[in-house]
Amino acid sequence: MPSEEEVERESVTSELVTEAGKRIIKIKLSTGKTSAGKLFGKHGKGGRPDFFRIVFGAVANGLRSSLGSEEGEAKFNELRNKSEFRKSLNQVYKDIRDWFFNEAIKQYNIGKGDVFAILTELDLDLDAGELKWVRENSQVIYWVRSDKIRVTESCSKVEEELRKLKEDYDKLREENIRLRNQNEELSKKLANVKARVSELVELLGNQENS
Image (cartoon, rainbow, N blue to C red; front, side, top):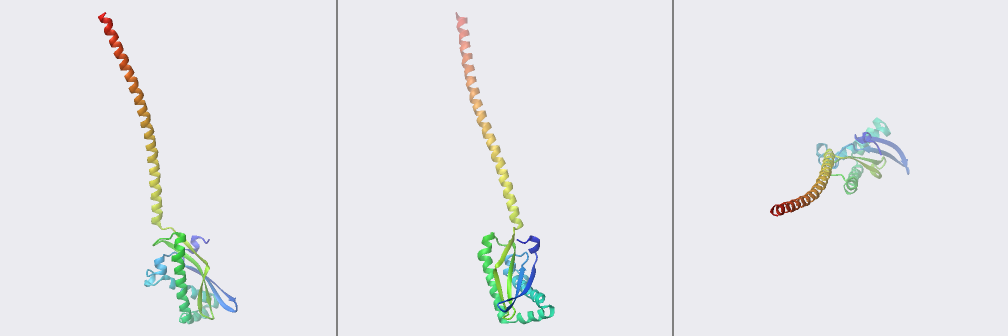
């Protein structure tokens, strides 16, 4: 698994290959640290999901890296206006969003507002102008939110305090039992002493009367 430093910021790598006679640009990207609201919802830049900005940037960088700066820029301007590209982009967005909300959040126990990065791969068919999501090469890197860490720490402190209180309670209970037993033993001894004193007083009185 890549390190946190390698995926915490948006990044893109690409490679031009030929598959079944088709020219395909394989684009590997990291969304960088983000949240569901930013990546898929209205909390992205300009109130638009960041997903589209990230993918547009990844496609543009992939084209420039694979075809050269000028040709890549020209191809990007051509593709971005093609209905096939836009339709496939919207489908990729829907597929990744559904995968995230239906599978990833359950697998990683990701909550509202939590921070994560998605590492994924896209195939861009240069001839058809269509984008395809490579699901099997996708994963989520998840960072625990700071307030969850504080909650965890607080719970640990409470558990430790409870443990100490229980130990103190057990010690006090044992001491109480010991003192109670001791008190019972002393009460018996005191009763015996009182009885012996009564006997001696009675004996003494008898002797004085004789």
